[in-house]
Amino acid sequence: MCVTTIVDVAQLAGVSTSTVSHVVNGTRPVADKTRERVLKAIEQSGYRQDTLARSLRRSRTDSVGLIVSDAGQPTFADMVRGVEHEAARAGYTLLLAHSGEDPAHEARSVRALAARRVDGLIVAPAARSTGAETEAVRRGGTPVVILDRLGAPGAADQVGVDNTTPMREVVEHLLAHGHRTVALAAGDLAVPTMAERHRGYMQAFGTAHAAPDPELVITGSGLAAETRALALRMLGSARRPEAVACASTETAVGVMEAAAALGLRIPQDLKLAAFDGFPQSGLFEPRVTTVVQPAFDVGTTAMALLLRRVNGDTRGEGEVVRLEPRVVYRTSCGCGPA
Image (cartoon, helix red, strand yellow):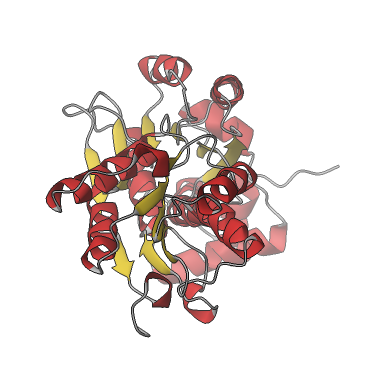
């Protein structure tokens, strides 16, 4: 079988092999007409670049790894889309793995992606992850960006949102409506984002000079089924709260299912607000008051920071970027239509 080479493309286009290489690899600008001739020659000849050989020559694979707990969650899905959008613009292929909130599985995924020689790695750490495997890969020379679940500033770049301020604002809003018993469906406080949202809840009570009832804080895995079971007990008790702030989409689903099972109407019998919420939240009843994250922008920012490191920028300690969410008040918290 005859294999078309870069030399064949160059002869067909009437240009040098270096010009073909610049067009294929994007290493230097090429005049539009010349570029068109080269692309036409590639199409006519059926030339296919040997990406493996190219990666060996360049010590690069033009691929990046991304690990999240569950890309099926709407917020993580938007972050993944943002990472992939920015990666594709730069000519990189994205390899996606799920940790399933399991630190051991996260470590295996980090090792697997490193073995495939990805040029960089973006990780949303699993709950209770030590991050040892990720740090080992970074120390080995592979750039790393921490996504969404930020820790103390360190050598790795980190990108997420401000979780504390918007949760404080939402709970202050509920308290300002005169609701003195506001519960929190907090989820797993080992997840940094959930811990930060819990902090915002506590700060709101401090601002109101009120004491939160610890019995009205639901923790656990944060999954909908477990939250539903815990919320059934809380909402079915004599100390039923007047309002619930939910720290995630999953906890909001659990609370809303529990309320429905008990015949409680939102917002007539129970006020509710949620961090993240649901896609097209404004189309459903009740219309859910939601803290909306710029999740797509978090993804693009993470990839931009990774590319900076991949391209050789080693200046300074890791950068910490927090984007600002926005609160959209709707009828579920007792407000009128937005």
